[in-house]
Image (cartoon, rainbow, N blue to C red):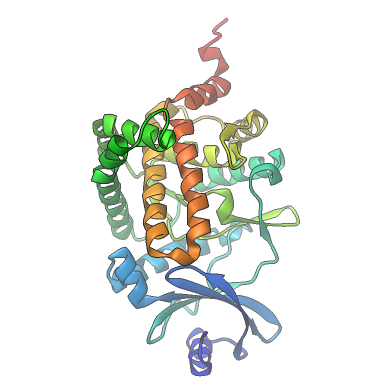
Amino acid sequence: MLKPEELTFITQALGLPHPLKIIKPLGGGDVNSAYQATCGSTRYVVKTINKAKYVQDYAVELEKLMESLRFSEQIASQLSGTGHVMSAYFAGEDCLVQTANDLILLYPELDAVVRENQDLSSSHVQQMAAFLAHLHQTSLQFNEALAQEKFTVYKQIGEKIITLSLWDKLSSCTHPSYFFPKINALSTYLVTHRDRLLNALSALKGTVLCHNDLKPKNVLWENGHFWVVDWETAGLFDPTADYLDTLLAWCTVYDNRSVSLDTTKLQAFMETYPLPTENPLSESLSVVLIKWYFWLAFCLKKLLTNPRKFKTNLWHIRYSIRFICFLMDGAVISRIETQGNPKACNPD
């Protein structure tokens, strides 16, 4: 919990008109916490990031972390004019407050909820497709050197994930029929296609500023209106890969047993934001798979290091495993491309 003197310091640093008061904790993760707060009659969410814990867990320098947070919030601030992005509170050019132990960000509180799977309608999907199209076509001001550095780091992390010996071990100690068959399938796939995945990563170009995690978990809905949150992953990326990654997130349904493609939502998405014509979606499949392997590896690590979040991490692991298996053979990508360009299969 934030101390009274820290709240006073935050109030002064951000130039708030009234003292900041904590109402209640809202939860948090391994390295961050969130609190509901008031400033006069205005409600906020205070996000704290433990500096030492973050630097240790993510092997990043504190200055790089602060640069990245400012970069992300400046992007969000520029997009706030859309009416669908809520950025952190800025005092002049800065949004970060640094205390002895934490980095502090202040956000307006939203009376909104996350919608996923069956709670998402075709209308919701259309709105997100339109937002993605707008984002891909919007020129933003940002630190290009930092953006390129973030993109390079992303590719380096991707390479480390692909070359982990973990996948070889999982492939050899599981069985395709009777001992963790799904884990065997996804680990064997990676080992078999490792060179192809590495080549796709090497060829990946960051040409458009993207959110990079525009999934239902990062969108809040308030009486039909949506807010895109959590811009920490914002950076340069390939627009076709981002299109495919986002389409899959909004046009699939997970029922805790399997992942399936919702063709009604798919049609709504693709009618609103048609398939990019520059590159086939199939060429971006490897990149999307790498993102899912990264998330799986991350959740496996968290399962071992944070027993308090065991159930949450186990759910994400199971979901990731099923999603990777859903994508591996490429059949779903063929279905998407066929629906987006039916004349390719029926020229008459």
